[in-house]
Length: 607
Image 1 (cartoon, rainbow, N blue to C red):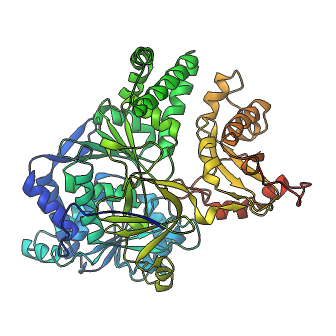
Image 2 (image 1 turned 90 degrees about the vertical axis):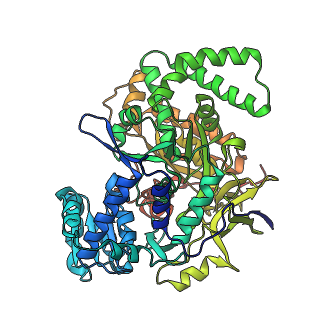
Image 3 (image 1 turned 60 degrees about the horizontal axis):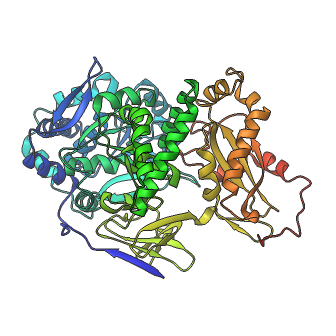
């Protein structure tokens, strides 16, 4: 059993809560910009630390005046925007607890989050969110108040709270200790009903304080980031708290269609994204080059960039490669760099493996992608690569204050400041995921001699073929999904004679690819799913993935679905992870069709 421990860099303060992070920030840099909000002309207006605190206290007073009591739960359903974090801190200053609800949640999911948590109030962003909440409001009698951001209710709350004394807010914000509940975050629900994860104030405080000192190049008062992934998820939520602790200026842009112009105007120094975003940037850049007749130049530039990064790892870049890289950097790579705002030096990536090729490509682009690893139950990051010594393909050593252990069966176990306090009102589920104080992640991994963690698969997703071969789906899915026309890949084959896959087409990239390959760009997804040229492109991606595994682990057959898997269809989580168990049920007939007439005995597993 291999174990790696990293001592905390900051002495734990069991009395501290998240509000102390903001108070410390205002004391240190009151006049520095802590946020920037978009303006009507496409620009940004800074909000200083002191001004943010003033707004937080005003809104907290409004919550108090409305009847919110210490310990009360407040639901919040909104896209990623400045007001999200304003409400978050105002809730803490009022002594209450926020319960995030994904903005894509169905009425039944909203009802579960609100009733299971015992929420007494609900904040929605717009009319659509309110309509879904209103549909189930009668079934949530504990909800006394509801407010809507787009109706100006936050300003009305602040105006109604002017008579609440400052001393009352100071009293309330100081009530919570480190071990107390800071938020309830419900799991995405890849299996079964979502469980409420009890994240404590110490989880946020100790992890933030240690993380900032571990990666000071990324998190400091001179850095900035543009958040676009949902704040209802622990990944962005933790970064928003970390940014306050570290004095990072934060902007928000929930509309991915406006992301590129927002990057250009905001000019962040680091990004936060899931690997799919980096795949999309690469693929769209490649297809754009193809459209302009420069596809070969782009691919050559990418190959040179990757070779350049690998040479850096090896400790020597040959002169010829240096010259080639300088040329392609000026012709091709600099344009992608500018599209990201021109200042982004780092990116933090999580939720799925990035892949070696993209890691090397972006590194030569000047964007060091620091892969990390974590779950909702670990307040996001267990580990993250550090700029001074990062390893492409690994998710770094544990953050200070955390320990990682690899169990006999390869499962990753975690202990430390990041680990949650358990599942809300669910002792059985809590006991199931802890072993002698170690949290059982359900993921499989390895630790190298430097303590760097590498994720090798998901324990519950391991496929065992009829021939007894163990197959980790991600090993095949991740490289295939990198192809520009492929949306999602779901490897199947449990107790079957061989491995197969369900594939969907990327509806955004498909028309561009069709046009670039002299095919009808208006072809429907269903038509494209049967087109020989499209099938040949998918086969090439499958062949490339198969080259990395044994014959017994390789994909022998695939089926292209005529529509993409989405969160709306119920097949993806809000962080775009596939709901494998739901997909296996919904497409059971399609999967069985892949094996009709196939042998069930005598399948070789020796290769």
